[in-house]
Image 1 (cartoon, rainbow, N blue to C red):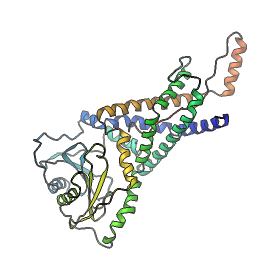
Image 2 (image 1 turned 90 degrees about the horizontal axis):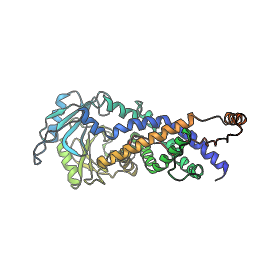
Image 3 (image 1 turned 45 degrees about the vertical axis):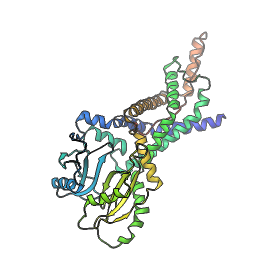
Image 4 (image 1 turned 120 degrees about the vertical axis):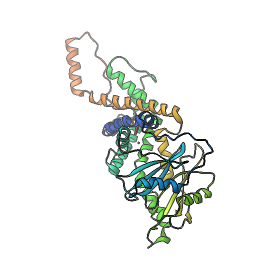
Length: 401
């Protein structure tokens, strides 16, 4: 590669890295505990624990579950009914002042078998909430998400440019060699080595984190693109004043695809539904397709099955990117791998920042070297390390975006 091209790629790598490094460090540090959010929740006592009952214990009607939850907050309207991916023993019922409210919402955990209230977890406070909000939107809502998405894009540019620069800058060293002659040389080699070794993972986590920041916009586009066509027959009609049985709506939806499992239910007016429908989301029952959802729209006033449109490619990409970003689909072994790679990323980011802050002005370095040579002519002049910035990467989450 010509000297001019090397200088161009060095400039691209330096400035794309410098702009996003501080935010990537923040995302790595906050993402690390998010990889183990369930385990940390159990240690802190904030996770909901369902009592052990015989496996053949029948489940309570969803209408009863909703009645119990709404009885605790009679002024709230239902928004979502969700379950943990790997635990169907209880339901999370989300209630709000309006179907689209984002503040002052209430969550009630109800036993799926006995319809007994297990807890009223508060997801908007505590250590994990702070970590999550910093990681997702910097407490700035959609603007924060889009800003982090831009930082993720700069991260990808830094990774690509770092790969381009790796060969010309490391051609005189064996792979894996870390010089111990000077601290700067040591950290430069370590920065380059960890960057190239974790390259694929960093790019994957960075890209999926960037996609996750677009979630709100993708859902709104889905409503405009597909739901609007399905709602054409409801033009001019008011939403139902009285909601039909949510249990019956769920039975209709699951009967449409009996090989799938129930994921969650979005009530009328929420961001995942329309003002006139229950939207029942079904998921696959295998590890490979357990994150892919199938929406089924049921008229919330008459309990008539309306449609089951396939998810568009952009929402499928979003659903696939979420577990891949946090590494939470392979159990504890993958969580540990994600955490180790996240720590390696922190070292890459920190060493890149150290190398840039500790850079020397070329003119001053040459003058100092000449002065030292004049005073001690018998001592050989030390070799200067090329002051290139990061050789490869950062990331968007602690394993986690």
